[in-house]
Image (cartoon, rainbow, N blue to C red; front, side, top):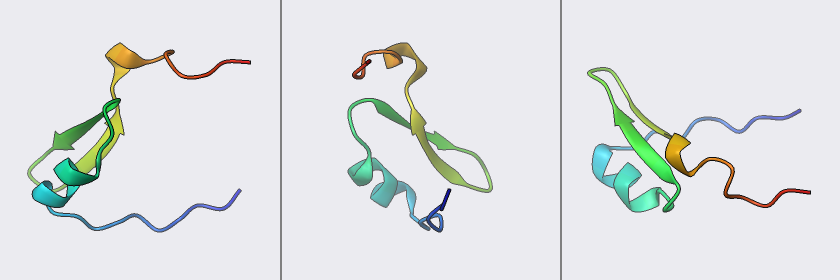
Length: 46
């Protein structure tokens, strides 16, 4: 499994980058993008 390097973004950049099913989590040391747990399971399933 290969992982990409994390993107370094400002808060403004992160807000422009996210999709409708994601949240921006802001802490004093970082800005993180994560999936919205309230919208979990709405993706495709096989």
